[in-house]
Length: 339
Image (cartoon, rainbow, N blue to C red):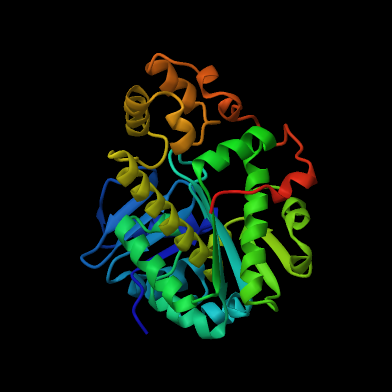
């Protein structure tokens, strides 16, 4: 089995205190890392304890540190090599669902569903399948996504809601969670076409699970839906997150080819700068084709380019509102989207 080089653990307060004592008293070299309460390195690995309580261990010697220090002295339980013993349901047949692009100004919202069972779990681990947010290289995310899709064959599904369709849907729904519920339900339904007897679907907690249940068609009503915090620790959800991210990254590349400019990820100053330049070249309505216009970033970009939201028309009129401020009628759950 390929040796793992990255581990992440959520530590309780007493476990954090124990780890800090170990790091202070051992032969570790302190290093400056933002948002940490302790960060050290050895010749073989780096250990970061973040203010959130997450301990990240990375490097060629990461597995050795976890096995001989973290497990016996801090966690007080064996985890490496015992994932299936500690979480036997994790490799039982089920699908995971996750999304990419939700918080990005440019590009689509991409939702993916991926299947896992006992035969697929080990090959996925050898590919280093993990939550896509822990994969810092876009090239690696694309590579793992490509390899995953090849291995899974028909055992995955992708729903891509392009910017134009997204803006139309948001103008009607006024809720990102409602759009997510619809897209999650469609991904589940599509994967059930290939694996009709899949018993469970797991996703991260993003809203009312009943919304997803209501959005499911007849053939999906039998499946058990589970929403939970930190669902990305589930192997199927992690696989779905990578496939969704791969799809999002390719969509940004397609935008670059179409418009001859780079479309940065997120909502950073670089994103705003690129958007202002785009609006000045193509006019305000170009945002409807390239961006999620309900973000307040839209108003800032348009103001900088000497325009305003009224120039976007009805599809770009809605601005983000607090969750729960709008209730979406069930009959709209089947609205068409761009694929």
